[in-house]
Length: 86
Image (spheres, helix red, strand yellow):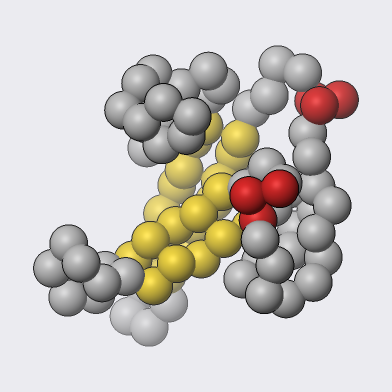
């Protein structure tokens, strides 16, 4: 997948940077490969390495999985450039 749109700061607009995601799955496992490009990597922010943190202070990538496909409930998995995941 590579056809993404922004959520912040302007929801629905074209992204300023390219992102690619590959999904693999088996009978009992789900795997995500995420490649986030940045034209100015020196500006990447990754400071948080603790649980229950507010990832909005860092750059981050989130995956929402809705097992019931109801559009209301989902499990959220978030990772920052430092590799910390919640």
